[in-house]
Amino acid sequence: MKRILCSILICTAVLSGCAGSRPSGDAVPEDFSFSLTWDAYGVSSYDSTTGKLVKTTDATHPEDYVTTYRLTEDELTEIYALIMALDVELYPDTYNPNADMYTKPLMTLILAVKCGEVQKTIRAENIAYSFEADNRRGQAFLDTCQAIKNLLTATDAWQALPDYEFLYQ
Image (cartoon, rainbow, N blue to C red; front, top):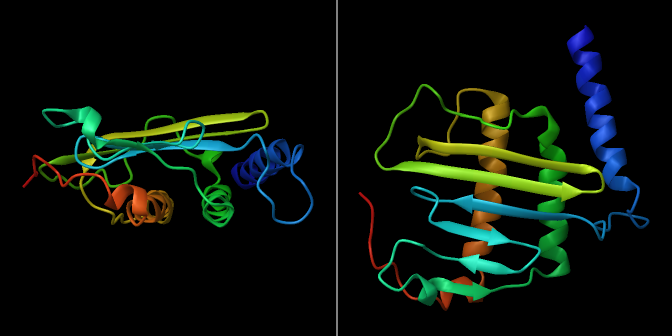
């Protein structure tokens, strides 16, 4: 019972900490930002503060795989809702959502969130390259990261970057 109460209090603190600067309605607070690193060995990334979108760091000329992309208001609202539903404060700083699995190559997911007083980074490094977990919390984390990744990789900015030089098997 204490654990449930503690979880409710933490969730309330997270949401209210971000809500302090929140305009009315479902608008995203001005101080909300996030970054996501993903893919095999964490070669892809996006930072909403700078707009830096990286397709891969594993290339002869990695600078050719970098662009700037500013999320639309709708995209940012969608990502904000996904992250708020995740309750990032409930996750440990180092996390493995599918600890009983192993794949080659390995995947890295790093989700960092800033909003109001909340600054949280969840590092899932060198985990199985799978977006499937056998537990609800792990699946929620994987689903959130995959949804953000899918949104970013569907953009024209991503599509305009060169094809991968090296592929992992």
